[in-house]
Image (cartoon, rainbow, N blue to C red; front, side, top):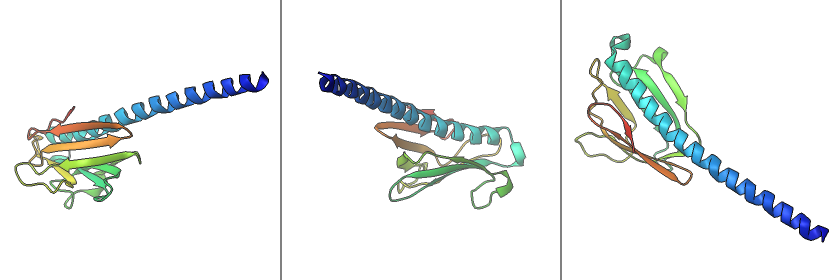
Length: 154
């Protein structure tokens, strides 16, 4: 009888643990897409405000093969290569976050591995508009970035 009771208690604890892991994965999945939306909005707002007297942008650092994200960098300047590195704001991204598709070539043809979004000084508009698809655990979210530079998570 004691063995049956012990097995029942252990089974219940296992079930609760599996459920808690699932809930935590859902929370982390939502946080990754919200963080990306916030990073894009921050850079666009800094450009619209004319902060530092330049355009602002975001550089998405991720592996082109595995699509695993490492960080997002908000930078001051018209391009990532010509930025003022002293103004960089680096946001580490979770190791479970993957950019399954990044198509930010505007009207041009995208290779699906675009890394940079530049927002114009005072208008916040961008020519690198398109979509970013983010996968985190079992959740997939798409962020649409129109030419106006105002990101929308779907």
